[in-house]
Length: 157
Image (cartoon, rainbow, N blue to C red; front, side):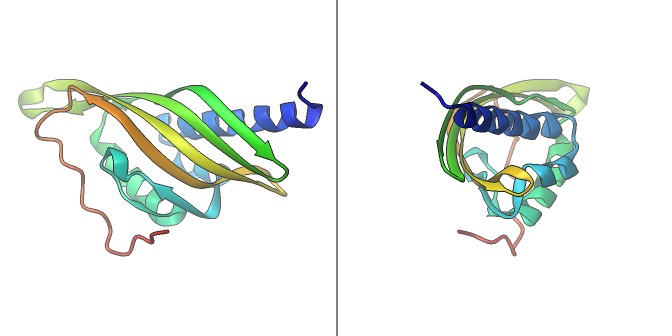
């Protein structure tokens, strides 16, 4: 039987994960300050991105997502394990993205991935301290799509 504390922790973590996706889809990247620890390590390389510490990755995401007029990050199958003030989560994400093509056309591509997270309880609530994307599939990605260059100062873990 789940304790009330475990139920509360799991619900708070699920809300945090949903908050990440909601802020991303609303392009409110500053809202991520309430999702990640200030020194969080983030690795988006599996889907063509960069890895590094939160401030640099946040700046990169803010810039790169401008190339997509529309996108969604739909989360499901959230598996959370809590052990005191630390937790892990593995979350499926279905990510359709619209990309402009030459001649005014657009194309929708689909990316399936998992977010694999480490979380810590802070005085302000749960925060992600590490996020690593694991790619599952990519469908209908235009041949012209190339990952943008990574900043030269991105930190690695």
